Structure formats: structure tokens, C-alpha cells
Length: 149
Image 1 (cartoon, rainbow, N blue to C red):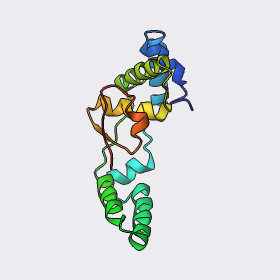
Image 2 (image 1 turned 90 degrees about the vertical axis):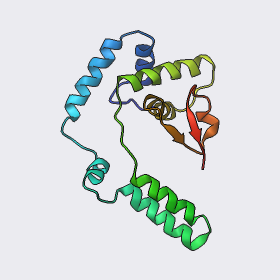
Image 3 (image 1 turned 90 degrees about the horizontal axis):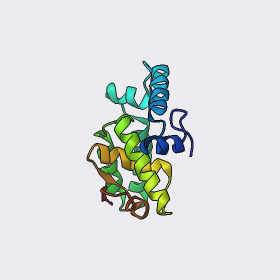
Image 4 (image 1 turned 120 degrees about the vertical axis):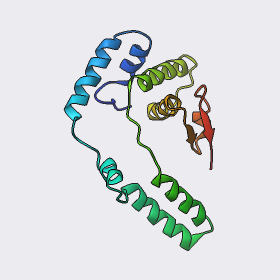
């Protein structure tokens, strides 16, 4: 797993378990200052009402689907869903949920990819339903509401 903001997954786990939380918070704050003022291109596009690269790519996939199968309606539905996507930022609560869930899954010998745990932690923090076809992994996360296409 690649570090998030230069912080290893293990440091998040340790912080969630009460070890060196202040250090992780300090490092996150420093990294946030380095990134201050910058905006990802996806966010810039959303803010300006432009089509995003996700929409372009999904538009291509949708067009190929229209030509190849009856799944095009589903692809168009996904494209419409993406238009209303809200971006959420990583915060202390998400980090704590991530660390707690990763530690729990590790204790159970049932780990999933760190990025999946982070996605689940974001959904839990914001009380969102996670849309995924990867039920096998995400069902391991306690309290997560999942829907599949």
C-alpha cells in the first residue's frame, strides 16, 4: 500500500489505537499546508461545470456499449450518477475509522486492500451507501451499507 500523504498505513493504524496520534495529525497538517491552494483537475472541472475525465472515459465506454450490447442503458445510468458525485476530503474521523477497521480486519486475518478500507471509512464517516460490485471485500466492513448494480 502506498502511503497516504506520505504517512504509512501502519502509522494510521497506530494512531487509531492511540499511539502517536499527535504525530500523525501534525504530519497530515504539514502535508495539507504543502498542498494548500492546489486543486485536483477533477475538482477544477466539477467547479467549472465542465465534463470530467471520468465522464469522458465513461462516455466512451457507454458509446461502445451502445454499439455492442444492451448494457448501454446501465452505462448511461452510471454516467448520469457520476455527474452528481460529491467529493469528500480525508479528515481525522475518516483516518480514525480507517485505522480501527484495518486493525480489526488484521486481527481477524481478514484484511482487504487499504484503499478499499479508506473508501469504506469515507462512506461510514459521511453515512453514505457504497455502490460496488465488490461485495466480497466490502461486506467485511462493520456497519457499511452496500448496494450492487
